[in-house]
Length: 355
Ligand code: NAD
Ligand code: TYD
Image (cartoon, rainbow, N blue to C red):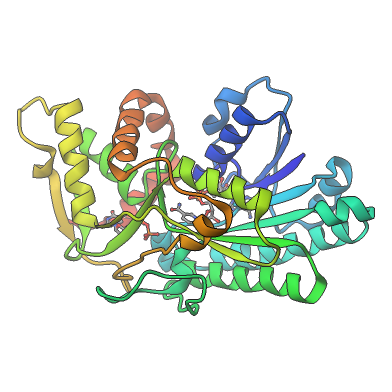
């Protein structure tokens, strides 16, 4: 079986659902269920014996030791992380604990387990670490996209903690021979995306008649990838990636934030027009910029295409339409996440901004 960490979050849940739709191989899903972990993301797997969920922390060495000994996975896919840049600015501690210390504890537990495996299982074992393009820092407008050779220049507590985890994974390969693979992916979007991130926040705020808060001038550029394309890239790297290598994953979809917001407004105008006949664009509101805001990310994903033949299946146009439709068709999911910690966070983050 596979051990997936963070499999109740946005990308992890999509990965587990996709995996079990295509394979009979069971998944042991270890997730702490922070504010970002949501078991409703996995509702489709209720009663499916191939999915074993355990609530727990990747930093809990004793739990990891027990789970590895009992379930004997042939691979680990590590999604578990604190993932939101704005939260990392307000409170970096959890990011260091989970992304750095947690990854270290997971690597150590896996190393002990892997070292004791019989030769054939040891040879076949894989540890795949899911990381981000944000470790590379920020690009000027005309600079070429990030390749795997680009130096690490992380600028936020989030990206610094992910860069640290990538370094640990690399070192566990070089020092101990642990068979690792690392993927560095651009911004994902799609179903089950927690509405603190740009795209789902804009959709749910638009539908609720709330302001659409665009940071600064809205001209920051991100490179967007539909989440199931990220999942297919991870499956491909897990299958055939060269040990110790890193693979950039991206959708060749560089867009300024304001263009994303305008596209969402246009789609919502078409699919769920406002009762007053106005465009959702009337709700766009420019707000104070994020401190240290990275200006541009862009991923060069040619290595993954050249070596492993992976390309994304969705264009931005098909992916963003599917995403908007998914949110329109799942109001109960949206209502579920709009409680407790999420509401408190939004109130804190946008306190004092114009309505
Ligand atoms: P998410 O915040 O939606 O989900 C993270 C999951 O990890 C949650 O279910 C949470 O409960 C769990 N978790 C947090 N701390 C944990 C701990 N200590 N032990 C066990 N579980 C814990 O994040 P996501 O967007 O799904 O991102 C998943 C991974 O992909 C992260 O490593 C992130 O850095 C990386 N990534 C994300 C993006 C993106 O655009 N979202 C892009 C590139 C890479
Ligand atoms: P986000 O989804 O938080 O991802 P990341 O910071 O990891 O790229 O933000 C994407 C972009 O959207 C980023 O440039 C910040 C911007 N943004 C806004 O303009 N308004 C918002 O309310 C949010 C959450 C993000």
